[in-house]
Image 1 (cartoon, rainbow, N blue to C red):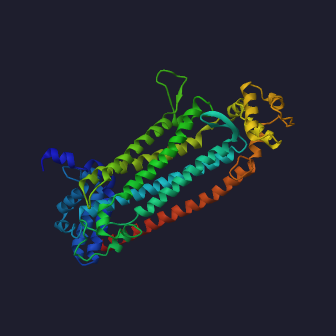
Image 2: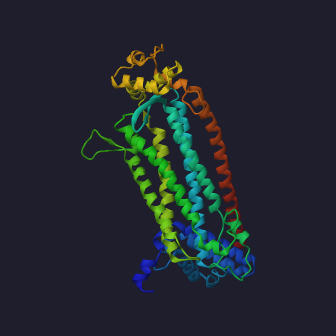
Image 3: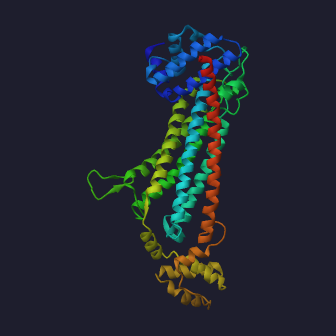
Length: 461
C-alpha cells in the first residue's frame, strides 16, 4: 500500500484501546479452534505462548507500520511461531473487531455504572447531612420557593439513578458475542460459538452472522448513554459554577479549582467548567457516530473504523467525569448561612401566602394577583389590605416562615422533613440492591474469564 494511504487508513493510534481485548479474543478463538479439531494441541500451545508474550510486552512493542492492531498481533505471533499462520482460521477481522469493541464497551459501561453508584452514594450522604438546611429554589434562575438542600440533592440522585439504569440496559445488549460470524456469512469450519462467547464473559451470541458484523447500534447506544450521563453531569457542573460565583452558596474544594494566573483572590471552578464543555464534545461524538452509520449498506464497510475512536473517547470522558463530579460533591462546602440569608430575602414565601388566601376562600387567580401586587410594592404585609380592596375580607396569618413553607409540603416527593427522610431511606435501600446487582454482573464475567485463563494454563502444562 502507498505509504500515505497506509498512514491515512491505519487505525493503530486508536487501537491501543482494544489491544488487550484483541489478545483475549485471540486466546478464546485458538481454544475454540482446538476444541473443534481445526488445529492440534501443539500448534495451539505455540500460538498461545506467543500471544501471552506479546500481551506482556504491551502495545508499544508491536506498534509499527500496520493497518490495524489485529494485523499487527497476527504478524508478531507469526514471527514467534510458524503456527501463527493458522491463528486466523475460521475468522475475519470483521467479527474480530466487532468482538473487541463489544468487550471494550462492556467493561467501560460497567466502570461508568460503578462510578454512578458512588456518585449516588455521595449525594445521599450529603442529603442526610443537610436535612435541616433550607435554601432558595429557582425557576428561570430567579428566586422561586424555599426548599431543602437535601431535596435539591435528591433530584440529582434520581437523574443519576435513571442514567445508571440506562447504562445497564445498554450493557445487556452490548454483552453478546459476534465471534464466529467471520466476514458476514459464517464459515464452513465447524465452530462452537457459544463456547468462545462463554470464555469471553458474554451472555450469549449475536446469532445472525450478517447482523453480527454489520451492526454498530451497540456502539451508538453506548455513546448515547454516555452522552445522556454527561448531560446530567453538565447540569450539576453548571450549578457548581453558579453556586461558587454569583450565588455564593458553596466553597469549592482546592482539588477541583484553580487560582487565577493574575488575580490571587479568585478560585475558578475549572473542573466543573471542563465537564460542562466535555458534555458538548459527547453531543458532537453522538452526532458523528450516527452520521457515519446512517444509510450504511450491509455488511461491513471501512467507514465503521471512524466510529471506533468516538466510542473510546466518549466512554473514557464519561467515566472520568463521573468520578470527578462525585469527588467534587463529596468535598464541596455548602454555605448554609448564605443559603438561609438569601431565601429570606427573595419573597420566596409569596406562593405560600397565595395558597393561604385560596384556602380562606379567595379564588387562586385573584390570590395570585393580590400577592403579586404586594410583592411589586415590596411589602407582603399589604396583602390583606389589597385583598380587601378587591372585595375579599379574609383573615390569614401573614407570619409565614420558610421553615413552615418547606414543612407544609407533605405530599409524595415534597419538601417536608419526614418526606425527604423517607425518600433518602428508600433510595439507600435501592442503592444497596444496585451495588449488589452490579457486583454480581462483574463477578460473573470475572469467573468466565478465569475459566479462559484456566484452560490456557491447562494447555500450557
